Image (cartoon, rainbow, N blue to C red; front, side, top):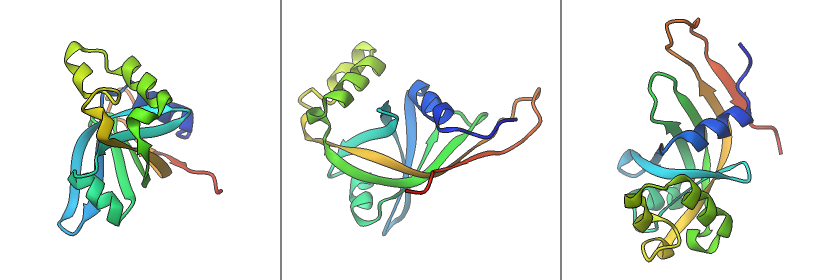
Length: 149
C-alpha cells in the first residue's frame, strides 16, 4: 500500500463534516468537534477566543486533529496558530459556504453575526497517520511527515 500523502489527507478532511480537535491545558486534554475547511491546501478551523480550545491554544499551540470515522482513522499532529478573524478571510468564507450548506448551518458561518467574532486557526501539520479496519484489507499503518522548512 502506498504511503500517506498530503493530497489524500486534505481530500479526506475536505470531505468530513466534523473534525475533532484535541488541545492541552491546565485541566488536561480537551477534545471538541469543530467545523473545518481546507483552503489553499491548509487545514483551518475557527472558534471563539473565549472557548476552552482557544484558551488552551493561547498557552500551548500543539494540537491533534482527527476525523470522526473510527473505522478508517486519519490523525494529524501539529500546531494551530490564530490567523485573524474568520469573517475577514474571503477564502475561508467561500470554503465554509461551499461545504456547510444545510439550512441549519447558515447562522454559524463565518460571515454571519455569530462569525464576526470567531478567530480562524491555521493548522501546521507535523505528522499524520492513517489505517483501516476494513475486512478486505491487510491492516497497515500509513504515515506522513511534513517536509522540513
